[in-house]
Length: 250
Length: 205
Image (tube, rainbow over all chains, first blue to last red; front, top):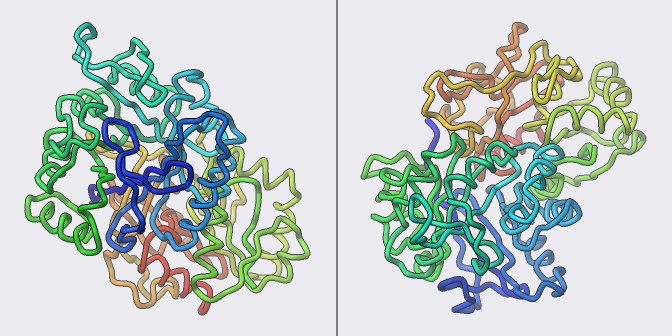
């Protein structure tokens, strides 16, 4: 039986590991706490704002990390063209995470899928609450600063048609909140596609993982709040999920 | 020395890293002489089947691999797309001929349970159908491996299947036919079980 995944998301600012809150770098880590034996998959994102910034610091971090990483590694942040994709893959990525680059030019999703296969493309969708759009959410791009006029369900379904292999849905308001995943948002997206959906932002305790899977329809639950997830805690979280009847890899 | 076939696609870095971790020297190359000098070969893969075959052809690798693997019996391990390329053909983006070393076509994964999502992504059990295959030495039946794919090889009629995985129906997840080995899952991304399988190939195949 396929197991639900627990994914650790690491965000980097200028090559340094940070935690984010409401999409701003919030807390700088001095150690890498990832328990690379219990985690099922790792996502590394470059959240450096300066568009002209040298990306080599991030590539260096990915290259170093990938050497000792024997679980799947998805990498992203600022990917705009096939050269960026190739550089991320060469650094050791198994998948790329695209967000604003796909909003700007949706056919970019198809280009990556044609070269590397659909399973290589994770479409990251950042959503804020909306007063006007159906369903009550709107997709934002460019570090959640620019409205797109699309609902997350619409954009995820379009992404599937274009060739995405997985959808990563993030609630901007829940980022760093520890209040749990935005379940209606996750549900709208998981109902809109037949692809696996990864939920992100808001996990503050282990019950939130269970809610994400059972109520949100998530295939994978993500957390970047690694401050609370040192050494044995990922394994403990998974034992909790298993006790609640969710198939996980222990 | 382990020759990792570079055909311009795929997670070559990950595979090379896992080979180095296992205590062997990886050489990532598309050069025939260097592949010939290697003790064993790995055909990795993340990508689309037609691109995979086109890239192999462009680099003259189809004839080189045919010579090394089929005529001279050098061991080869195909991983994910590399595993599918061992088959007769694939229906991904049309119909494309494969290397044809394993007598089975590659077709779209169609789980009987419609609620199962495709691609099949994540950790799933490997059921051993031929536990005496050297790849599986020291690995528990049902051990978890990491899968990520939308297509799958149909069951080869030649008895080369050594393991299956269930995702709305069983499909072929690992094969061995003489010196030709293949896994649909990614051993280099499957933690200890994966590293053990890779070590088995590198030491015992």
